Image (tube, rainbow, N blue to C red; front, side, top):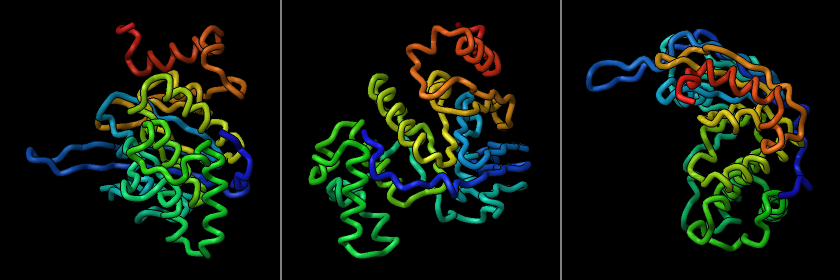
Length: 267
């Protein structure tokens, strides 16, 4: 994966503020309180990882920022504007790559560019840049079913980048991949981010992944979700997890986050 041709978004990344966020879902038994008084602040250009047990509201918090769920109380703000619906300038990448199976790689990446407008010549030039960035220039005419899981994730990433987002919301985007591919794709995305410096909120269950990617790791409590603890990751960039794992600083952070998650007794 190359960083050539990347558009510089560093001058316009978004700040995110979540205040007193309470979200409940209707269930057959009544209501499930997913978030209760959640608070989160993300600086412009900051990479924040959310970790926590299953069902703690990590994905719900992300959806609230994306304008996909309506809070009972509280609010999410992007760039000082209260979120009341899906905001412009937000790129979302989830576990399901959601590629259109009847479209080629090239045409899948074209989709957000078609919505934005512009000539096909301009779109084709941008698509070529994006596929070069994610290492898929030679696969432009392939269909999604002809690609590996990791390659499909790269297509989804290129499609997200096509919209020039000021904020990335990522819900375990590399979770379905095998461990080796997941680590490689994560490292490649980090290389892109270090050039773009776009604001990122990244949900993961993997403490190692959080420490490899993030500037700050936010630990959430079991449902109803609240922020339990935050850890500043001051490890030097670029990061190589294989080397970092043996440093005292990494081990101290890993252990502190594991303690906050209640994992110490399981190790």
